[in-house]
Image (cartoon, rainbow, N blue to C red; front, side, top):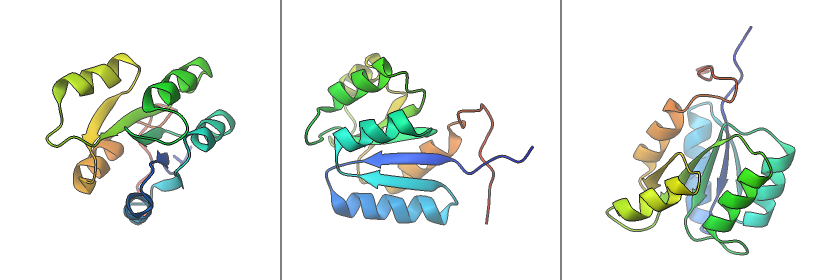
Length: 133
């Protein structure tokens, strides 16, 4: 059985960051869907399977905490990486997001770190995504 491409949903209020991450992920053969809307992200998560939810820590409409709770309540199984806007990453904030169900945190705008973390997370079927390209 052939593995499928890894699927990532990226939600952030910064259009430039969304564009940069979409381009970077697609260059690595990772399927990227982007939105600035937390409510749209929740709809997408409930109607599609994503391996990873990559989300900013400051979102319009719903807070990061609300999105994490609603995703859990809806049975979403995606790994979640929160892009933390504080630099350097603050351990107590990272621990807080993990306590809410996030898999981990990355520094916002550190695209290299973000890509590496996304690549090492398994797909929902427990396998590594196919490396295409």
